[in-house]
Image (cartoon, rainbow, N blue to C red; front, side):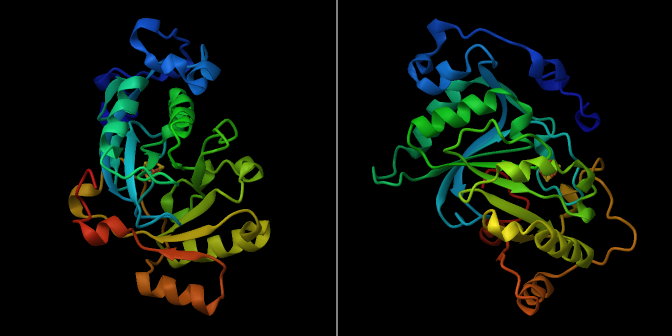
Length: 284
Ligand code: SF4
């Protein structure tokens, strides 16, 4: 039942998050990496993956750089602007070793320079719903990739490997999910992390501006104001939250001009990949 939040159609159940499984030595060359050893036996040895692809990082201070994306399946939120609803239920369980092999295969043509390119980003869905995501992140950092994590901000980020750059949302009111913000995560943000507001409406802008002032967020890490591009008809999953009554949509230009008028210490961003490729194209 893709839209009900159950995952049985691809073999992932809520109880999986509680299961402690034992790595099979014969399956895993990864057992030699410190990251995997650190998490044994606390995590499963596999993840439910929606897609792995090479593209251009489109939405952070890293925008414009080549990046391998590992998109994990499932999300417990239903943001009104979500453009990856196909990741709510579609996916295939893959061993960590196989995921790392695929990342290495996509990265292989790039020259061996430091810092290493492409970047690798774990995204979703919500990656932190699957406990083995922590081990994958650490293994990617062990392999000397620059590792990014996109997370909704609704789950504890404190256990994520310190080498990972965490790009964390603070959900604005028009998302319909702002009650899910895990505010204690702010204590764990480092200057190498990034805090993202996806802005759909003028009311979102006002709220984000207020949160920055109230929590002095500009002192924590770079702040991103990302314009929420309206969904195409085929992208709007019926399970998504509705825009709250009384909200007025904000245009890309209005967002840019309000940032300048208010002298906000934030980075405006459009979703670069949607300017390059059709906004509903997958795997880019
Ligand atoms: S957190 Fe929101 S935008 Fe991100 S995948 Fe989940 S529903 Fe979509």
